[in-house]
Image (cartoon, rainbow, N blue to C red):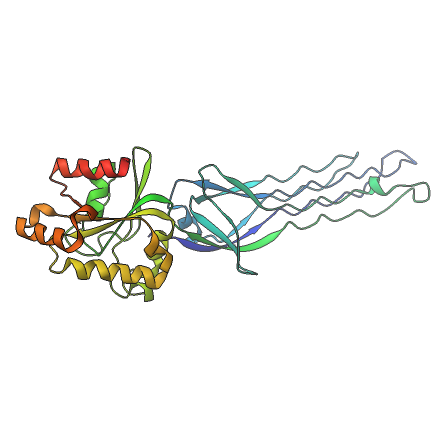
Length: 313
């Protein structure tokens, strides 16, 4: 199952306790060492879109605690840091005040989100002319702890959108050599898919239906992925009885979810042209205006090249 939101708790490591120790020889002073520092928690961005699945069973991620100080002024070992990999396009929200604190926008991005606690000072640090045998040391400090909500929104140059079974996944497969499951029924695609064509990232967004903005069908869980797409490739099947209705139905859901989606650059892609008569294609040209359209069939090499040229340019 594709997971695109999760709630996690991150904790920096606890600082190690300072040691209370005295030398073995008669009259030796304090020699307790300091505790080690707790490890830090980092988030790193990865191209793997499935990484939020790791939080289905595990929601707490803690860095390693610092080790206690030792005799002979030996400091405890610092705790190891941890790195949590998240998909590119993940927004991190602090659940306490519901503010977005950062966004993972590029592969390899690394962010410190929870610092480890300082190690406690050993009794050697508390010696003085007036206090020659201090019998106390500091406990280590706890690391920072936060609860985050993670929301993944795909970052893509082009997004294939449209009603279910409009041919979006088939086009992504043909253009990018992706391997998306396709079939002649609605909702074959149950999660977003990505492909690359000459440096351009293409996203196949699962089909929308009327009422998606209120949660029907696959609902708003996938509408949010369109927010990060630069240009929309709006797919309409040439088999449709009413292409104008299909177009307006999807546009309506986009606008009701977020009106800014209606301002994105858009190109209409008429799919499955091999299944339509010439007069049907001509009526679609008259309906939308020929300049706004790209007619394509996965069985027509020339039409696929036209779509590739549009994407490349």
